[in-house]
Length: 299
Image (cartoon, rainbow, N blue to C red):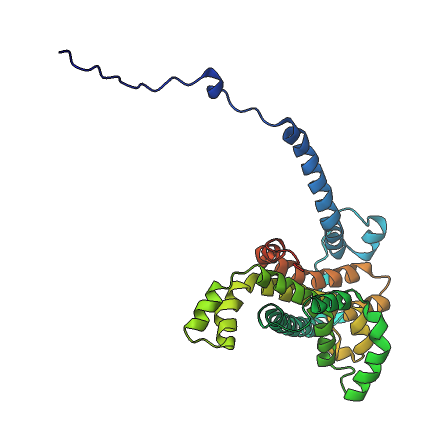
């Protein structure tokens, strides 16, 4: 009796076509240069004015008249010291920083608590709250300037930074609430239910479970509100009249009106105003971008 034959399975040789590198998609090859060109144009459009402002801040007033767009021939660093002293930039930057921080903190608290109530506490009305937020965020603030001036004068909030901050809370909170609500709508509720089973109350669930999970949205809402309050001009010029209480945007405007011919000092003061915003955005750009692209505005 002969022994059974054993078959040895040998790996088949790869086909010649499998060894060939994959061909790049023709559409991607044609789209890549166009993408870089578009991104380059957008970068020039965004950074061009800031670079011109920085160059003009280092020129003399005569050089700006002869060479307004080119690089400085002789660097005048004394323009920053002159602008800092004449435009009272130190006090103005402090006022704007306090207003921006108060606005960011207040908007973060209002938006987070309002979004939690809308998504977790079962408020009556449902979509009516979303409609109200959308309408209130789209209405121009100019419609309310006259009654606001009257009410704030009666309440003693006119020409007070806290009065301006309260208005900023009302103006910037609707969009921030929609942003935080979009995170809460897409967030699973299993962790909250487990915390309630362990005996946690509603406040404990909010502070220990929900708040850490929506941290990117809260930081993004606070950053957007703070930057808007820092750069805002119309409400500041309407409700702040005392020079010692003026934010930096209003102080820069007053300085420009008084020194319209000395564009070197005006450019230096404008650069001093823009630098804190640029530095803050560079430090928090990852949080800012994640807060915008992670969720949409869910309705």
